[in-house]
Length: 490
Ligand code: NAD
Image (cartoon, rainbow, N blue to C red; front, side, top):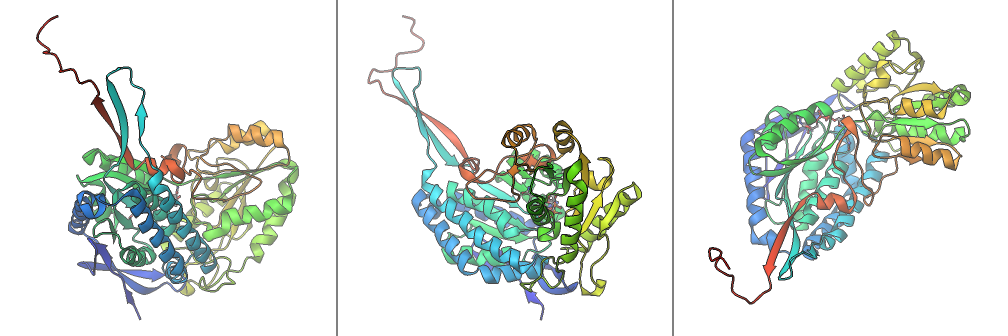
């Protein structure tokens, strides 16, 4: 039975004109039909968001009332987590263990911003004029175009919707054309929570029509984008049309630096979780492992054993540890980079093949490449798949140079028992996140974002909510003296 999903514009669920098929990556078969938003649909959604931004149903709410709506949304997300997780797993192939726990955490993001809504404050300025009071108000920026990629759509949209709704903005959220089911279903929770019509609009469609129309729309004040750097360049160019401000959360080629004093069993578990979770389709995947020479061979042996023991299979099965890739396009890309890397001199330690029969879905083995140098393609390019590239180093300075030898700068990991060295390396790494003796921890309270090609702006924490505001400086003259005639000289 093929399921049919609807888009959500101005408080109404609708089929939209055209539609497209969505594949279940674990079977490769069509399981659902999604509405394909046209430029006209985008225009209606942005106009609805603009109307809502100026309507008393939204502007008349106190910040505390906005917080209560967000809190209700958090409760609904938590209550519906099993269903949302099952949809995300069906539409993207991400394993049910991960989608269940991540969606529980999505509710926490909405809860955090629910609490923050009435803590977004303006301030007064001790202005250098005795007869003036100056206050600075913080006001919501306007209509936000939020665009997310196909991995973790509920999570990646929560880090945008939480702060922007807390700040009082309205939004048109564009789900990815791959795996949009959980977001289209999430729109029903927004509706149930009682947000006024038009405050949140949820569409899905392709970049060239839906994404293009959304990012160039004159009524959009800010674009909150997560995706690849190539698309981000389009988005930035598009923002020249409406002069919208932008935040860009992009890809990564994150290094995990392991010194030979670290506990290698513990490191191996962290590395496996860091690169093979979500079948490697994660922006923070620790895909470049840099190991001090003495630990190189022992760690590689441990990792090979662990990678080969990973259970690959049906993503809806709670025992599965690696599911399929989300799209065939993704697998083609991974196969191409792995083949090039081997031709360039990388040694294939394990994996490097499709995991199950092609007719059963888009599976790829957990793969480890031992790389002789940093020019190998898999060391330089983001694969967004279960592929680990390993390099070795001798000195701390060499480790830092290798770690920073990338155009990206999203996440990084350092494993050492030396406190002083940990501090030195943390200072030297060019990345928005450094995890020391751990990997992949996130929290709504902590800022997240990248350096270089990994993006601009930060999500998470209070600052993320401030990004959706702008200030208004209010000058109030306190003198009762009449203003003198400016053309009469005294
Ligand atoms: P993508 O850049 O191809 O697509 C992202 C979104 O942009 C999709 O919704 C797509 O429809 C839309 N889009 C495409 N063309 C557009 C255009 N011209 N105008 C406006 N929107 C357009 O990315 P993807 O392949 O779906 O996702 C993988 C990428 O996302 C990887 O690089 C990954 O690292 C990155 N990512 C980053 C983070 C982060 O927080 N830093 C999180 C997850 C994924």
